[in-house]
Image 1 (cartoon, helix red, strand yellow):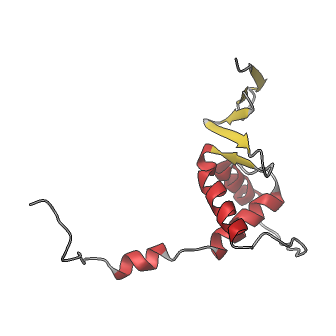
Image 2 (tube, rainbow, N blue to C red; image 1 turned 180 degrees about the vertical axis):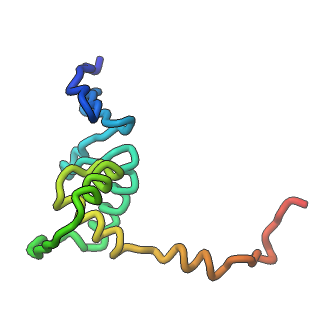
Image 3 (cartoon, rainbow, N blue to C red; image 1 turned 45 degrees about the horizontal axis):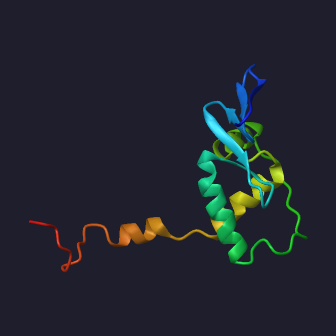
Length: 122
């Protein structure tokens, strides 16, 4: 049976549940293979990072990036993704952009069209 114990209740209201942490209504977990922290919303994080790995974008980690950003932006991004480390957050953001599938452009291009062979059921 899984152990349930409180981690902390002030502010962020954290609660540990069998290797997962509940923070503000989101379940956050650590990926066993990569050690990265992801949330239930993190299925997107997991999918993006897996695609980046398959594409060879994560093989060499010798590059360095730096810049000044709003702390509120970083905290909101961490809360939405469940990612805790700045490096992992930057890596996810860059991978998300690098792997853009151009869905919006493709969707707009077919707007208002219907395949003539599509069976609509009436």
